Image (cartoon, rainbow, N blue to C red; front, top):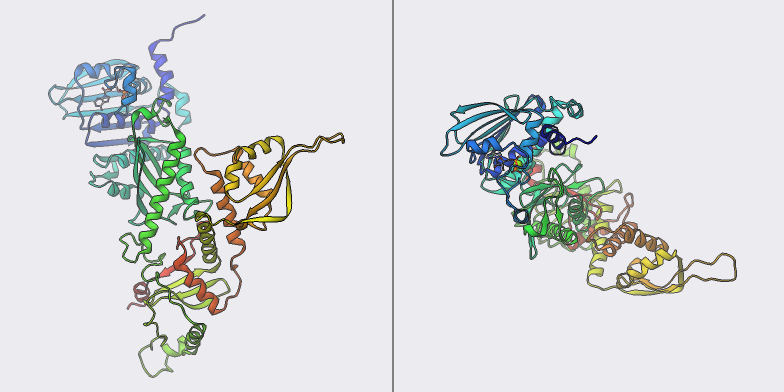
Length: 601
Ligand code: ADP
Ligand code: MG
């Protein structure tokens, strides 16, 4: 027998979609506070949110009429027609949150507008049980007690109080990031755990929440006809082991979009490099014409749908690449305001590396090793109580740049510069970066040399694979491959031979590689191709990384001083001076001042 469910049960069922855990209640209540124009918001949590969630704001407040209606289902002041959805400026529009929350908790509203007298309402299972006048200030305080007391199954899904609290914290932090103009406070069992006064600059808020220093994040800006992106992203090499510090906001709304997060990370893969297990930090504010985005595709509005996801992907990626590049350029200029802290920095003066004759280098090393030993100098033998100058090598004539001192354990190059900074380079990573940049430059300058193969190479492919390759033939040829497709050979044998292609010429850059493997890689990429991705470039990049790695000085190769110096001279030529193509750092630096401090000088 079919029955129409009572409104209470219907609300409780609907609550399952909106209210998953205390953090989702906090999200809905803070959204309402922001929609009401609040400039200060306080969130209080007891027992991980199961005892009490309270959100107090100094926003517009509600009249008595509105307060009585606000927890009814589909009661909203924010839209009146479906068209409104496509020009929506507020967080809310479904009119569901308060109905849902009040159906699964003991619910109380205290509210007051500028002009009306204040009132307090208690609501139980959608019915008002108590209405009293209140002498509150303008604004609204909503208290949610005993969450899920009447839906025990939900309670069972909750994690520990601490975990639930941490989710609440993350939620509040996300709001705070997007609204630096609002002050936020979070209390846990009456103890203030987050206190964010209003910030004049978005970066101040970002710094408060991501706990990063200037230089670890760099500003970002990008736009096209319909969209503007601003925000902050990791500078090269400042990555995290998890994705906890990645925020994307679309028209102020925090969203989860793994494709856009992927696009942002790809920007690092394809510029300065990032290790496989690391993730960039980013806070992206996307402002987009509301008509270009559907916010009504997820009950908790965690996801949105862009009318052109590929375009969005490309814009995020290119904006991040640009931000990272600008930071790299600034950072390579010695007067960079963004130049980084002390211990990871090829800074001042590297830009004009000196050219040493091998005789000079040799002489320098002689002098270094002829010095009295550290012990001799410091403990007695030397009558002069002052420690002598370490070296008489004439560096003053050198305009700046890195000077090879020694190789350690056939792995690391120790270097200095005229300022007396000390550098330790990882020789393989350094060489790999230099080779890779050279290959990339050749490719970008389209200085691609096509090398005909002496013996054309046959690559067997299935029909599907062959047609995929056919689809992308132009792109593949642009890389410097020439090939002919061979149709399947339906011979006399019972089993017909599958088709494939005959490779006639290959890009010189990729000489001596396994071409069957390359074409297999092509196919794999074409099959799972990422939206907005230039697969061919990505693939070429991977190949070049591999090639750069294979031909480089190895970890464990011994170097002559001349070879070592040559590697250092080439540092200035590499585009990304910090990281190897895979994103590992290739050197550390100790600034002269810092070294002085070690010895209390
Ligand atoms: P929605 O936000 O989708 O409109 P809600 O159920 O969250 O739906 O809220 C219902 C209505 O209650 C809102 O449209 C708004 O008019 C009113 N309201 C809720 N919270 C507040 C608040 N903190 N201050 C002022 N008005 C509020
Ligand atoms: Mg709402």
